[in-house]
Amino acid sequence: MRSCAPVCGFAKLAWKGNVRAPWTPKHSGVLLRSHASCPGSSPRGWARPTGHDTGIKTYNSLTKQKESLVLRQEGVATWYSCGPTVYDHAHLGHACSYVRFDILQRILSKVFGINVIHVMVITDIDDKIIRRSLEERISATVLSQMYEEHFRQDMLALKVIPPAAYIRVTDNIPQIVAFIECIITNGHAYTTDRGDVYFDVQSIGTHYGKLVNVGDTTGESGETGKRDKRDFALWKASKPQEPSWESPWGRGRPGWHIECSTIASSVFGSQLDIHSGGIDLAFPHHENEIAQCVAYHQCEQWGNYFLHSGHLHLKGSTEKMSKSLKNYITIQEFLQSYTANEFRMFCLLTKYRSAIDYSDASMNEACSKLATISAFTHNVQAYMQNRMQCQPVQEGLLWDSLASTQASVRTALADDFDTPRAMDAIMNLIHHGNTQLQPITKSIGSPRSPAVFGAILSYIRDIMEVLGVDLVDQKKSHMMPNSGLLENVVEQLVHFRREVRNFALTPAPADTSAGGQAGRTRLHRDRQPLLNACDALRRDLATLGVHIKDRGTTSTWEVTQQT
Ligand SMILES: Nc1ncnc2c1ncn2[C@@H]1O[C@H](COP(=O)(O)OP(=O)(O)OP(=O)(O)O)[C@@H](O)[C@H]1O
Ligand SMILES: [Zn+2]
Image (cartoon, rainbow, N blue to C red; front, side):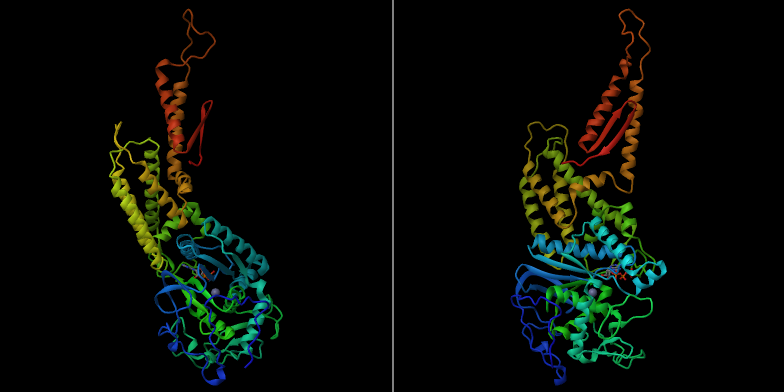
């Protein structure tokens, strides 16, 4: 059997420890060497990669258990993720999946010092895009580019670190065609009279079902041209009015799964460390991606770790939030009511693999945890700045508490990215801090412990920033929550102050006595304390970042970031 040349300049990276398995042609009756005979192989046929053990455990959908994360090159993780199909605004389900994986990548890079090379595909051609473009009477290209831009902006608004590259399917059609040609040459796909190309699932035997136990689903397909009902399209002959590209099989467009196998291979070569997506993508999408890559690269194992995030549901619903089910809240709508920090906290409070219920109650819990952290950092600053006096602190206990929190957080994050456990440890540290930070009115001469509080504050800020929650920015967003509650309170306060100030500034009746200040406006002397109180309030609010400006009888306010 002839093996094909790499597709158009595919980088076959010389990864350390990347051992390519010997290829056994399918005609020999044994497709690939069985993993059961490999050292370190699992019953499901997964082989532990050769390379550097990071000390992190991660649940691998290929083995259905936690595995040590072993990277082929020390300190480098190649990560491919399935991106959005861009035919509409992204919703909270998408946000949840991408924010959760953003958290995982931040942990890998910022806690464990791993350079994550992440690429994400943008599915900019598919049935839903074509249908929508026909409904809207705009080209599929214009439609998809518009929603791709919305998606990128939404991700930025949610503070998701952009991948090294977003890669569009339509920018990779020649590569996809070459990839399919190679699979045909290797004997794992066939063409039909209609100009479709199907993957021949039977040709890879037990290598189909690496991710999901597909059971015995073989059999004749009722569909025209398919040999087996499990076979799936690599290339679809074009129908009238559909976008199409030239290929050896006539004009057409790629099937869904082939885009990911091709693009991931074009960037990372014949092996990949980590592949991610929502749990709904495990089958058939990821199973088919694996089949294609095994057939193309003639390898035993293409993706070493498959990570799947759980679905976001509206509370009370068993269905995932979905465009097709029309039960969704767009990211833009959501950000009218909550901040990116609040959404991230909501994501941090559950494991990335679990389903997550979205409701006012679950968002309130996230907001309240964030407010507790924020208030703590604010109080610590006030204490350090001598604006708040406290009873003497048991410093040793606090140093111990900080050290054990740092260790617990690291352990939790190394255990399949257990963010709820890490958050519990952080909240516990704050609880200890708050217990010691008891304000008193007079403390002149009492011993003070600002350094330990400074250390706790720095750690909390750093670790939250690692997870993508910006506590410095939080002060600002906290003062201007989109829910409007605090904004309304400040508005009322400023309004009340303006009324009091204007009352205090009302001129006293003209002084007609001898020596009186003829021609000058005089204030009521007994109203001076009211003016003093207004000035004091303005000063106090300024320290909180709320700046009041008085002009004549009007008062306006704005929030500026505190340092
Ligand atoms: N409700 C959800 N919860 C978590 N992840 C989701 C949810 N909906 C979609 N995703 C994930 O978002 C990513 C992009 O999905 P894609 O654009 O293909 O949307 P989709 O699954 O077709 O959405 P929809 O069903 O709303 O049309 C995938 O990884 C998918 O698993
Ligand atoms: Zn994919």
